[in-house]
Image 1 (cartoon, rainbow, N blue to C red):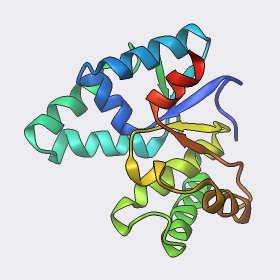
Image 2: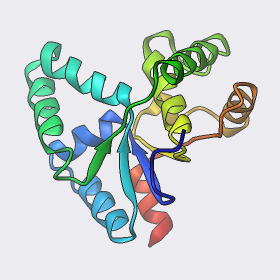
Image 3: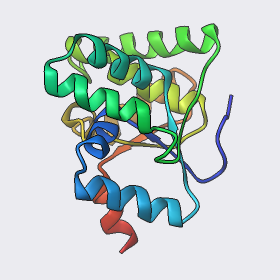
Length: 165
């Protein structure tokens, strides 16, 4: 179920928190790709993570999550929703990544976010999450193929910036 235009990127929660923290690399990334006509899509689990941080996080996390949630549209980001069937598919995919030991047990949401981006038809997940960035392409691609999902490639914003310079 594709929800985004052809040139779209999914953003992970840590990128939104970097924007809230006014980190230069995050704003440079967002501005550069917005100028190139990309849209920024926010998976449902990312919104849930930000909501949780805004409620239960440490003081700094609460502040940054509140800023992120309040500025998502100003930053040109669009949260998207998925059907309950798609959310179940994402949960199964995340469980499979755990079984394959591609993500730690504490990072189940990472697997859900990858699957949600895939279900939305977004080929890149912009993240600074080491757990996601450390998954080898040779291990991740077969997991997507097994689930009959289009692959999503985690990429750091700095890496994407260097690719367009």
